[in-house]
Amino acid sequence: MTALDFFSRWRVRLGYLLAVVVLLLARPTPRSILLGAAAGVVGLAIRAYSAGYLHKQEVLTTTGPYAYTRNPLYFGSSILAVGAAVAMRSWLAAAVILFYFAVVYAFVMRREEMELRGKHGAAFDTYAAGVPLFFPRLTRSSPPGGASGAFSWTQYKRNHEYEATVGFLLFLLLLAVIWRWRVL
Image (cartoon, rainbow, N blue to C red; front, side, top):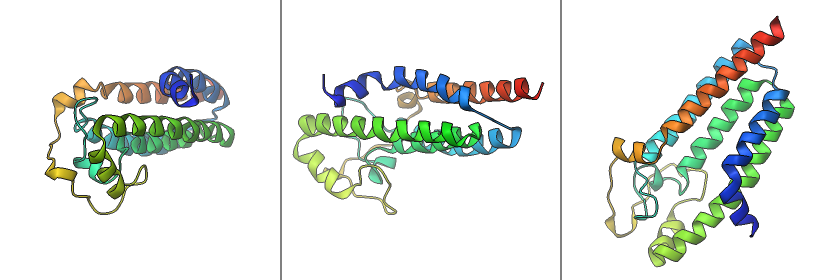
């Protein structure tokens, strides 16, 4: 099993273990939780918008947020990670979570890129040439071949994106419990 395969398969399970570690390091305050939640909402919104366009394993998605970055879900996740780091109010916890994100998702994005190139060939190469891997461009790219697509709540649900929202809310709740426990 290569590092690409390992991180792609185990990123969520490793994330649970990481959550335990960073929660032990967390020193939240009501203010840090609110600031982190605000950043997290931005990340969740980007993820939700992206999930409403994404048709995994079906078509090469190049419209909506995918016209700005090839990985808008992961870009949204990075903002969510920053929100979690702010909410925890611990430099060590922030460093751990941001390092984890950078390493794991660098591998995951490369693996997915290889899969998309294998499945969609030249169409993916054309798309990749005009749309950055991670950080969004400021202007929308024209989708290759005039592909079109619109946001769909059905697709959002099919991609189980609501689970990210539930997970982040539980994380914030745990931080509030940690803060309250430390105050008592």
